Length: 283
Length: 187
Image (cartoon, rainbow over all chains, first blue to last red):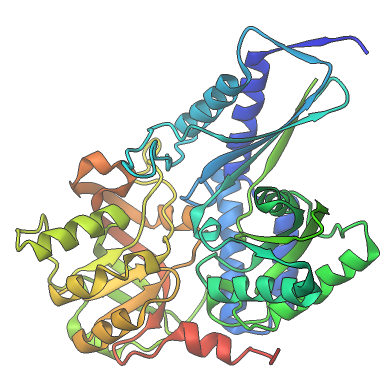
């Protein structure tokens, strides 16, 4: 396959568009899941919360406003085709320029501090947190996921051992959701990463949030666990906003990877009901 | 939203604050302060060192918020609540200085619940993630202190028709405990 040249400005522009879209337009799968939950929820407070959240998402889309004031850490997944050659710039700075411009033009809140100890705001919401992946082909797929810290702070990685088994994984997930309670802005989308290493499990859990609601894991046994644990989470009673109800999570997605004979890393990544993500393909 | 919400004026009347009950939906109107993590730390340190505060807290309501910037004619951008628990270690000292109302999201510590009871205060929950709606309910916003903190500064805001629910009332009743308990199915 021939090498394809892509200009840094094209990457910058894709990141810019995706960041603007993600922060102001709730993905269709999330909207749909909230609408379904509003019909199914038995708590009056819960239904009221869900109606307000739907009204909020419609208002944000109409007026191009941030859905949530926590416009988040800008997480960028960049899947780069191995035939791509970037010209007229550098990958990271192109992505950061796109983020800075989107947060300025969108009037989004800048929430990044340069140093976690000194805590001075960088003023343009950079740096983005970038996850690179080399893929076959000559396209670049950019996904921007602005992640608020109400839900991020409640996420968790636990290094289980093989003897902890499925029961151990289950209790990590249930305990994480329980202790998050209202803080992570339920109804949640629960991403679970199992396997790899400590850091890789966390990334798997985050990537699990990219999968559209309604799409099950391709493995039948894992898909069954997704359904089972989602049901158990909804039995916790936390409900929309944490005020009580049957809709504590809209979905639970599991991603797995090979791991070591001695290990069973488990990461639980909580996505709030305003799980924002937008993808643009550059080719 | 058609509902049976009570209209509650801010600053809160201490007598009315005591009539509010966990689970009551309210619509707040009037003046409040906006503050989050960094301002709380500064206020707490000032109280500990017996320095003068940049604003008197007596009878005030603090909204835990870090708003998006306004755009065009809008005073304020999206401005939903942040997680209240991060303010817990500073809150009893602020209640001691006369703070009467708080608006945020999520549970409070036992020490905060006790201080709320002691002072006859009230903790309202706003809806996390409904920032666009809340931004449209803030009619004015100005920085009162610590402008260098950007979105984390201490703000004075005027709100109108601001939806919230009483999460912890002056008797210490907690919707975050009672609400989920009635929907929980044993695991």
